Amino acid sequence: MTPYLKYLQPYPFEKLAQLKQGIVPPIDKTAITLSIGEPAHPTPHFIEDTLYKHRQGLGIYPTTKGLIELRLAITGWLAQRFKLPKEAINPETQVLPVSGTREALFSFAQSVIDATADKRPIVIMPNPFYQIYEGAALLAGAEPYFLNTLEESGYLPDFASVPEAIWERCQLIYICSPANPTGAVIPIEQLQQLLALAERYDFIIASDECYSELYDDENQPPTGLLEAAYRMGLTDFKRCVVFHSLSKRSNAPGLRSGFVAGDAEVLQDYFKYRTYQGCALPIPTQHASISAWQDEHHVFENRQLYRAKFAAFITILSEVCEVRKPAAGFYVWLKTPISDVEFARGLFAHEHLTVLPGSFLSREYNGINPGVNHVRIALVAPLDECIKAAHRIKNFINTL
Image (cartoon, rainbow, N blue to C red; front, side):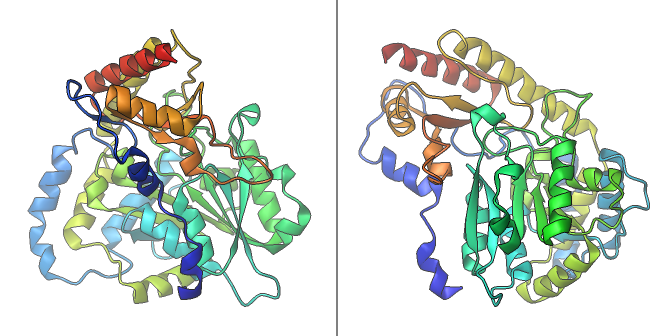
């Protein structure tokens, strides 16, 4: 990895800190931070209680594969959530607990990219994107290929636009549905189109689904990759790996608990890699995770809280600008009347409100930076703070 470290760009929040440097915001306004996607709703008490109840497990080395009870809870949740037969996923070979999706999305590339190929391998990813995808690709010795997701395509990736020469070198594609930062959900037809391409060109699909449980319509939860694969007859989930986490679903980002599931052959190599990497989940964390995956009531309540915030926030802002309610996730991807960087800087300087410039989440590719003139607003704060934030943004826009 060492030769490739020089290609890593500063993380978006480093750029944001530099942007705010030297600015003194108004002291008569309390700080509101909506730049980081860190859930602020309380972690359910039963998760905390379970963690404490099993604290004696801190005296035991956990295994990489984790407790069978945890893997059974995960396979049960996957079957129920994505309309799969109970026996569709083997808890012994097709599920691995991970220390949150961030570390898994990064380390996964190290176990599947073959940098000794005749031509430098390509990793495809959406643009804008979660910067972990880019870092994972670069440090695995691969070349990132950015797939612009633009307003005219509903912020969805256009797989048909990728040249055949790129598919032929592609070893891995990251997709994110619901997307960070746009909230767009890839429909099942498009997922199945991608599955057909993976079979034709023999690449792996890594589907980041950590926002899958924060959706607007209870009757239309986002489709997952495993669900799309099973419904088209790919019952072995060949070339498919999904990533899920309790951070957003259960308001437990500090628990650092998630899982990967899918193709048994791919996960066998990833299991070998993780055995050396040493990121096994502590036993108390595993028990707390079991309790979380087996309960849906707190997840429903979580969605209700976000819906209330979106409704209030959008009602206020729609008086001064065009604002779109996303299908899922907790971000507002807001178009700005001026440069996104200047908008974020001015909002902090005049209103003591922090949002993230969209250009910090994307790269210029094919002459386009799809994050330009957008800001990402994470509605993670309590309802009253989100309402205050909406009024402050409205006030700032009115000054422009």
